[in-house]
Amino acid sequence: MAPQRPVNDVMLILQRERDGAVCLAERRGTGYADGMLNLPSGKLDEGEDVCAAVIREAREETGIVVEREALRIVHVMHFRNPEGETRVGWFFTARYWHGEPRNMEPHKCAGLSWHPADVLPDNTVPYNAYGIGHWLKGEPFSLHGWHKPAGTPCR
Image 1 (tube, rainbow, N blue to C red):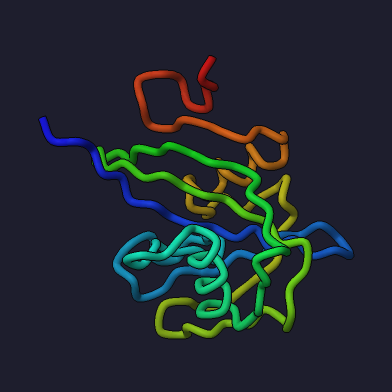
Image 2: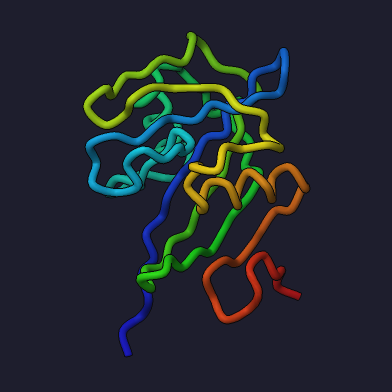
């Protein structure tokens, strides 16, 4: 049996200081989860580490500049979607960033909006909603989509 090679995703939880709201983007024209909300996110490019990837994705999708030293890893999720595809999600926050988030990819995104982290809209992509929920609880790791109950920690 060949070794499993999961997709590595990076997600940035941008939290507004004044009210704690998080930034979500409405997917459009991508062919996957269009009309749903997700965090600024993406996959690693060849030879790229997770920190470089989340910095690049933040710039590409929202126009903000995040410095490596501002990043904080807040959750890692081993996820298997209903189709059986496995992913490792790296959820980051940024202590600070430069610029005001704006929609830099109108061909893939209908717009950015801010939402209370503890009351996400029903149309939030579940993968992202799980990560935000675990971050709020201070849980560093979770499993989703495996034979164990969702969110069961390794012990």
